[in-house]
Image 1 (cartoon, rainbow, N blue to C red):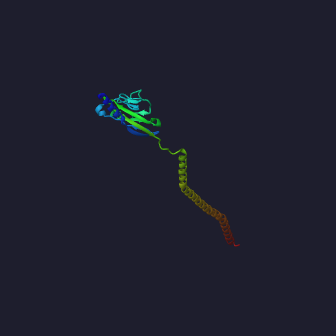
Image 2 (cartoon, one colour; image 1 turned 135 degrees about the horizontal axis):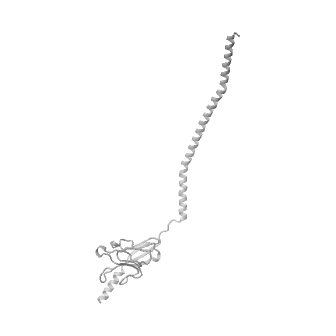
Image 3 (spheres, rainbow, N blue to C red; image 1 turned 120 degrees about the horizontal axis):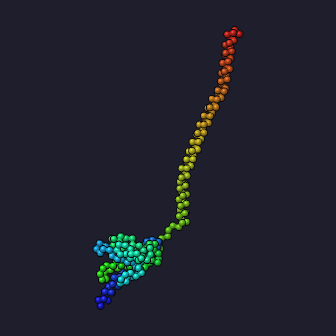
Length: 213
């Protein structure tokens, strides 16, 4: 009678579980911990489905309390990423899919009869929200680029207009300098012969007066 009652109590304790919701393509974490400071390093195993009276059914991964036991990992998608030396034996399932939906069990093997800490988790996997399609991203990028071009065009046009004005001003200065230079050259060409002829004529008149002519 006592054995039947004990088995009934064990069945009731194992029926409770925690619900965890994950999204496809993301990582799901099933939290499981124990008092490392009090117990020290304990062996822990994770399995699919309800935990049996001992061990783990459909074992996914196990640890001796300090490191993962080689050869017990069912897939590289199952990881114990918590601090094992602090009693954090939470299971991380990488890149979850719909097939990961279901019950999981964490068994912490505490020394003594029927002392094991058994925790169950029901994982529900939901479809992740749709991301922006490549076509929409391209359209958004084009629109952003078009706006950017429109924003910089006035500045570029102003720069071009300013540059053209500077060229025109320089051309006007060059034209003025060329006009002055040509005027000076023409003046020399026209007035110097006149001055020479005038001087020659005066010299001739002076000589005539001196000779009495």
